[in-house]
Length: 506
Image 1 (spheres, rainbow, N blue to C red):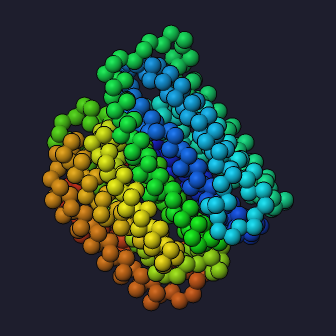
Image 2: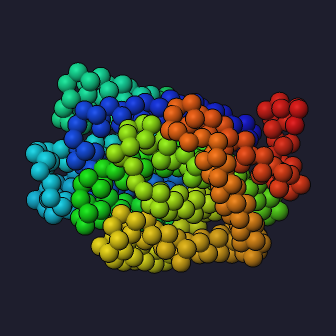
Image 3: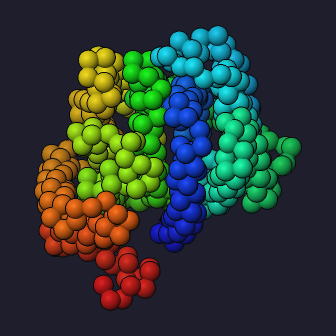
């Protein structure tokens, strides 16, 4: 049942996300040709600022979401109702708090920007702020769908909203290129989509409308409070690592650099979000696995998940290494390119972040927020100090180095150590042994793929790009299958493909 639900979630997430992604790239193409580059920098800056304000969420979402796994598995509707009532009260307060705190930042807004001449920037920021804050009034019900392994419903509504928004923004930019209209459409569509998703959740779970809701038991409350305390630290760390790059660039380099960086970030973020669709689709199933299955089964599924993560990281990493700048040039023009050194470090950072996905997915499903509560603070301090210092001295590449340094010094070993000590019975040395095998194969394959592509293709054309994608897919998958064909994880995936998806030829 877990595999069936996960496959359904993955299928819907993949289809809707690819369509949404294509439209996002179309929006960015029209945007950079319709409005000055500084407006693109504003998008990246405000996204980071509001991610910092979202710290007010305090990790309640993951903490309560983890508490939903057991009552959903046991069909304990009374506990589910009590948890969702808590969600509703908490997220309403959080939305109000974010809007209030965000308004207090308005007088200081231009401090974050080096040499900007954009008019009405305060009002643009307020619209972004309302877009973030109002979403909390409805979005809490998404967590129930996700925890109940119904991620596909959330994906459909989310993607429909993004598709509608992309189409309207493209039309508006082509007819009347105004940043005002661009951001107002964002607000209206986001609120409408959240409202529609909440109403769908009410239909799927009609008992959410019942008035008689009992109080949570003391044990559940204590678990939520404990995990929330830990998640506060995780939110601070995550904000410092993932939501400060554009702020640092805007402060020490300028909005134009933010605009260029955001184009690369959009593509990397798209690949990461696509993967997140997959992993969010299986997290609830893994939570069910951890609650019900043996230690041996949990270790087996973790190894398979890590194997899939490394395989995906190799395919995407090789593709980026060979074709990243080619894609940027074909998409929006040669004038938006970073040099090869910056591009390469971006890909290294992406690979290191991607390879954490299996460990983090199992950590979230295990609810191990308290056990590694100090890690995010250490990561945040190292990242901020290194990023600011290196950006001041080396420019854009410095903020990338800062992320790599914090990942290698802190996350690389702490996250698996916490998981294997508290939830999954795997030796840390065995994990790193596999990790380095995967990394070496990926590195050598990427270098060979780049060399072969440069030998075969000298011009930047759409046809050559498509052939390059095919080339990278063939090489990376052929190498991976050849090198790891005898591993137990490969046999497990092959059996799943044959039995669950009808691929008898395997």
